[in-house]
Every structure is written in structure tokens, then in C-alpha cells.
Image (cartoon, rainbow, N blue to C red; front, side, top):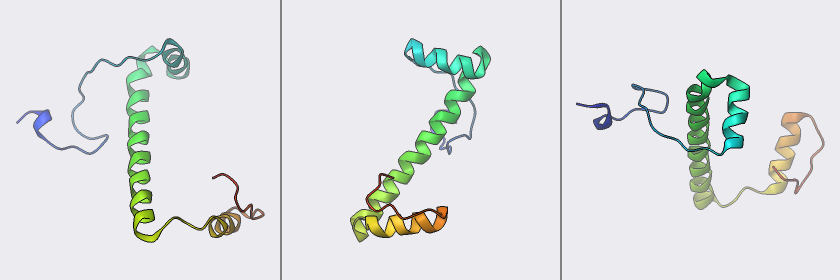
Length: 93
């Protein structure tokens, strides 16, 4: 059974080489942060974070479909309790 036939969670399983096209500016910024030899690891972590965000977006969409969107005033009040700040109802999250 090859690696393509098995299911792995993000970050698990053997590594596999692919070709990725990036803009020159993006690649330059990555290399400035991690050097030439750190690009693959950096992109792996970035992809894992994006998958986590996509999964969270799907969970939120499912919740909203079932329960309706969250009340902005309630969210602001809870954010204020968590951060110790003033409630800013209607502020962008």
C-alpha cells in the first residue's frame, strides 16, 4: 500500500515532494524569515494552520446553520469579560 492509498491527518505520514509556485515577494519574505533550507517546513506549518482555520470556518458555518448567527452584542460582552476591556458592540472581530 502506497502513501497515496492511506489516510493521514495534517502533519502526519511520510513527506512527499511537490512543485509549488509562489510570487517572488512571498518567497523572498519566507526566505528572509527562515533561510533557504527552512522553506518547506515553513510552508508545511502554514498549510496546517490554514487547514485548522478552514475546519473552524466549517464548524462555525454548521453552528450558524443550526442555531443562527451569534448575537454581536453578546459576543462583544463576552469578549470584554475575557479581555478585561470595555464592550465594543458592533466592533469588527
